[in-house]
Image 1 (cartoon, rainbow, N blue to C red):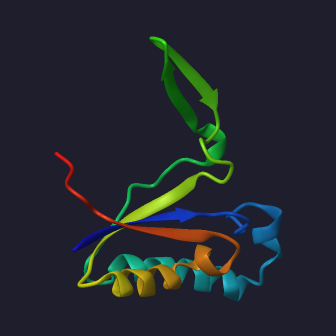
Image 2 (cartoon, rainbow, N blue to C red; image 1 turned 30 degrees about the vertical axis):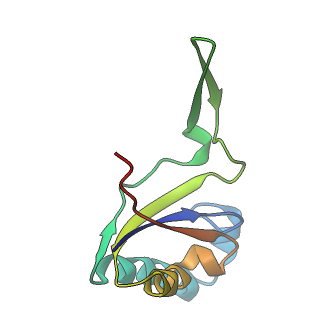
Length: 117
């Protein structure tokens, strides 16, 4: 079964930010190592690197008009994703708990892949 894991940064310190720079160097290295290990996990397909929320554009259509808003649809915005082939939802949740954003102020949303058409 395939799952998509949407990663929300929330208040997670981002590289280059003051909060990131305040982290001990060893913790910064560990966060990078944790993400690298996730990408090497059997069944994981890393998502494409996404730009930051500041460069996102949200597009809506209303009465035939295209409406473009700077920023994300939700305040936090998705900061990344990965696809996981796993045997169960529980396995997907266990992997989601290993994503650094889940423990550093963000969250991970797990959704099974569905075929609608």
